[in-house]
Length: 313
Image 1 (spheres, rainbow, N blue to C red):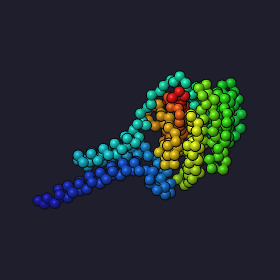
Image 2 (cartoon, rainbow, N blue to C red):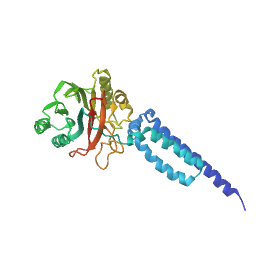
Image 3 (spheres, rainbow, N blue to C red):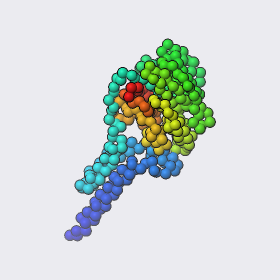
Image 4 (cartoon, rainbow, N blue to C red):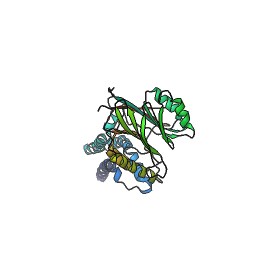
């Protein structure tokens, strides 16, 4: 009887295990160096913003490991597991919520044109002292202001981006961020515990076919923040970029992001069928986050975010 078949099977299994280990290494390398992938035909944009979802490849690799077996296979599987755990694992663990003595509640939502009044009322009822809305529909500024007149009498709006505040606003300034028309603003919020410089933005859309305008806006906003000497800064809005996007990196270097107070990532878009990207953010410098909540407000395709800011930190 020929013994060639077992030898061929053994060789095939060895090749399969080597290929499996290479797959594990490739997944780990993808997660670590996703921002270095050339952005050809929008590939870089897609890989950057879906980077945390690369972890879904680990269960698939586990199934393959059960087929090819071998100690080396399971050791190889540990490589992407460890890499994902280090890069994204801490973000999945909820931060402890606190009730600081000097707190500021800031809420933000892209209301998708039609839900501005409802969103403003619900966010105010949830305790937000400063509400910033993006993509406000035509004619809704006065409606929102009327709805919030008794609780948030101070407002400033530029184009489709607006702020309503229970505290006085001053030094308001529109920002075009290189877009050619204003789609962002900054304003000082005069709280009972000092002045907070607030930036709010609705960044241009990012698609694989083109995201140059968004990239320019994020770079310009990061430069504004870096040059800003204010002691307390908060930036909130729809950045149209996740925290893993290479063009979001300058903002991440300039400000610290508020950490989600629940398990998982604060995915905010789309609301249906399920949130896949965290493109809305609350970021800060000179203050710390005491909690960040996500809420389904109105009929927008974005979730709202509400952050508790510790002003004494």
